[in-house]
Image: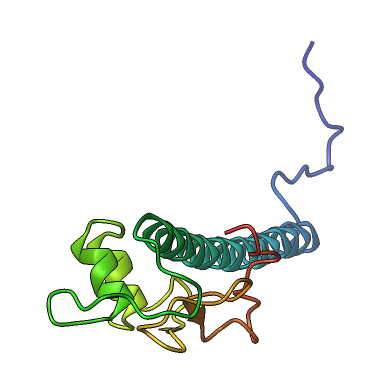
Length: 149
């Protein structure tokens, strides 16, 4: 059935200016929520990547220390002209090249922080990390618990 308008009544099709403004404002709010959420997601991913790097280096260091019988707070034997633990870990295949570059501050953590070692040639004591991130205070790039690493 076709409905015809009475004579003299003009029907307009489309959106009014107010409706269009409401639609645009709603879309802008949704897009801003999306950007805020994606930024928080990226920060979380960067933090997780940094903590994973700290974990991998700590596990490699402790494995190397236990396999070769070093004690906590001791120096490793001189190998290839160095006592640097990171170089020995890399030379023996405990860590890969990218991880070695991050440990030696040649490459940053995922969020742009720098990894530092308090003493590169001494095995850390129980409860201490061999490598720390410069963003550990500002962006919470420190694991909640690392005693079992």
